[in-house]
Length: 316
Image (tube, rainbow, N blue to C red; front, side, top):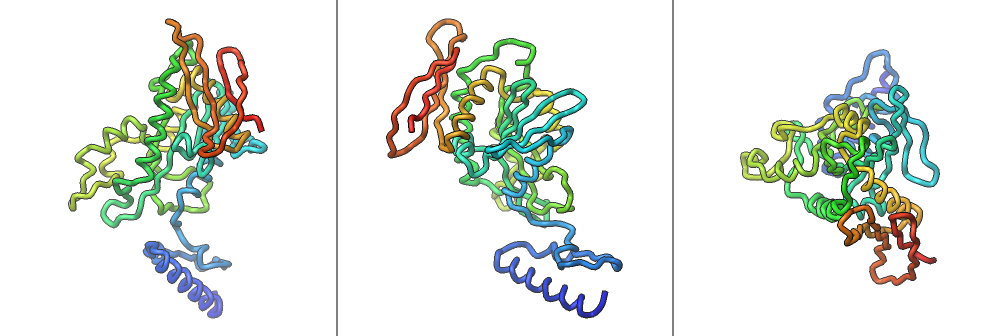
């Protein structure tokens, strides 16, 4: 590489370092910049072996690839992607909820729907900060996570009104649909098309883990790390659960979520999810009330009967 090119790279490095300093970003990755002798980079950033990712980037990356599945296409007029497994014939839809009305109601960022076995799994992403001692940690408490879990709890209370019909496709090891994915901000091989590295933790396990003494650090603060999480699902094991629908909502629950989700995506509004169970001894008759969360706004509604579901839709 000639002298002028090296000087240009040096100037770029200084600019990047200054920007990271002003933003409060750890500059240690800059020391690991590697450039082979036969390479002619267009930018200093071409030599970085790792990158500091935002949660949004992690979510988008995972939406584009699912281990064991082949990407088919994007869904028109929706923030979603379709996947297919040629060996088993399993079909999967991945829906982006991050920063959209779906996140406001579910407290999650990415939604997986196994079309074959009618099962939803909903995931909330959390970025772990760099730590010299433990590699990556997530500090507690975090206000946003607490609020998101409250939304999940409300959603779960409504889902609990819908029972397992006892069919073969209804079988689940657990019908809990909520997971948290903790991802290190510093990710190696940023050019890789692989799924974002991280730990999937079921919501019910997180509730126990959150109170566990093992999360207390030497200074009395609480933090989650690979060293104290004790158990978690990695990308491969999580994808296997999704593909086999071994966890997630049962068929009756999924039918109601599917109807509600379509209303949210079509209207673009935050719509309250509520299930009203019939007073009859059997649980065959169940209605779902889908109402827009309009705050101070008022709207007219009309009832529309459809088999055992009742959907209340807005009249524009």
